[in-house]
Length: 359
Image 1 (tube, rainbow, N blue to C red):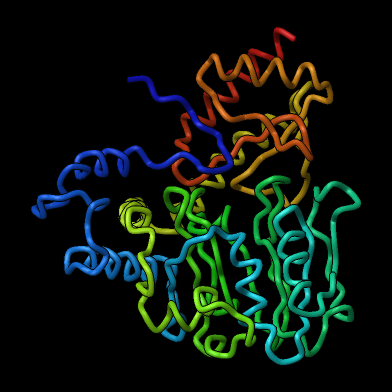
Image 2 (cartoon, one colour):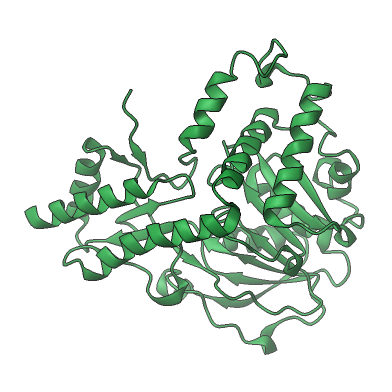
């Protein structure tokens, strides 16, 4: 068997240790005589899995007691509607910082349910930076303030959170959750699709402060009401059972590596290796500069479309896959989530140096 280095933005690389445990337990989980995939979500065996997954997530992220953890479906994109349906319940206003495609989509969807104010945007430079925020442009009575903490496509991230006062801060953490410690108490809602740092596609995790639950708009469907899932322990309907099980294994792996502080140090080291090369390269150029650079998603270009295509094709043959950049940026993108070993980044840089020497 020959494993490649997978730089996909998502679904993304998972820790090999996790995959090996999942493979060992595929036919029989512990002594149950069945796979987790076959297990009733109402069984005592599965109840133990989902309970332990939540416990580990709370421990690793230091989630306060006054927050609910929900295991949902529909991807982070479903939250673009679910958030306004549940939170646009007083002034029916919300503030948005537009730093990429996903922040823009969250803004566009929320417009169906209330008044949306764009506080700042970096669209003028293809979302290659995080804009400075002017508090005078914040809506004082907004029901929430939305950001995308890390921008998968464009490779930027918020280093400093906006000070929203009493307005709940809502954040999409799909591409950076579990990559470094965060203060959960600074957020009203955190949501994230699992397919980058947590597990396979199909699971969405929502961490929500309890006081934000229970007052949805009248038109809210039962399945889009946070109360429905909070009251039923994420068991109102069949949850994404296998995705939750894989998340449990990933959380055990993170804990064994030293938790989020260790993840942050490891991710900073990996990112520095690639950024340091890009900053000195003669043909490869990063698309983001300064403190806004993502630790998870690193876009870069040569400035020549044909050369970009040649690089992506030759890299694939050499065992570095999914390096093609998003169509709105072009070029290349290396997503180096928690599970990407430092060896993968080092070998990619070696390959890039050889490509540069020959082109």
